[in-house]
Image (cartoon, rainbow, N blue to C red; front, side, top):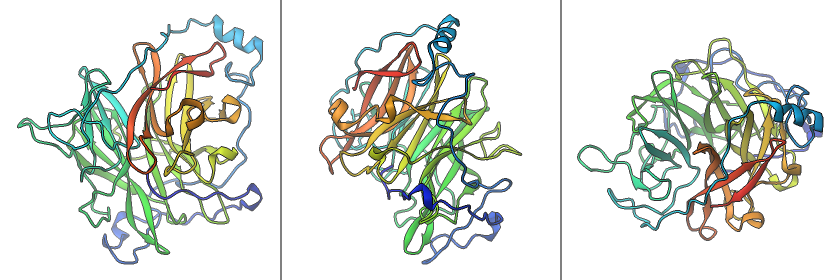
Length: 402
């Protein structure tokens, strides 16, 4: 994430929320108003539904996970599953810390997202080097160079929406998610839309471009939730095995009412907003002690018939930040934590400081994750590529932390 942490409150304090009617973009205050209060701006069903009790076990129809019995696991093994390869280590090549065209980069690059197109990898991150959507490219996942235009100049491929409030020309954007949706590419991002009680209120914006290199232009309504002081952030775009697009995000919580959580909702086939008639589903909320007071940065992927939901938790500012995962029955859940509820990637487990903000991907029949970790706490969050192995019961083992 790289911004304010979420809010955690005991389950006993949860109360049902009254969802206010959505207002249209035409009712927004001018961007940059000193005490601008943002309200819900999503048409249709509420962005955040009333709280419910989340399942603690996967349904019997999902034959994977730590709690499933041997008969269910045997059923899974009897299926014709795609082969997997044990991932080989991917070490990041040396590079400079200055963002320069044509020069390998090994500097600050937090909350990375990743796509592949035309034999090239594109990685996107939280704003750095005065760029709204800093974008690196690579052919081998080892050496990364800044995205350039035809003339060889550095490119900032995103033009944010008019509602984005920033003292530096819209550069306060972070934790992007990019994916090919329909006949183009959708880039989602977190950004401040105003203030609420002295705190920056955050929303999610959608944009569209003709390629993973952009240019991305704003589309649709802003995605806001005015009843939460810190709003909604950390979008991730997931295409399920049938090609249906979904948007996942982090809800920052409501003081004394509801803790932070991860939510999902179907996108339209064009990737310009939520699908008509879609509804939001809650996937995870704060549960484990190691998660501290926030849970965020979702990344969903399907690998060898299993749907995984990765997430980050605790303070992004230090070595307590870590990455956990759940197995889901599908994009709308239910999702159940694995690894006995402990993080999969943590400072203690892999020796990287505060590993988080990751994006899962499949490369050469191996499940991997591009994530950030501190070189030293408070200095730079740099890229790493971890490799996982899927066990017979569908749970994961860290083969290499990257």
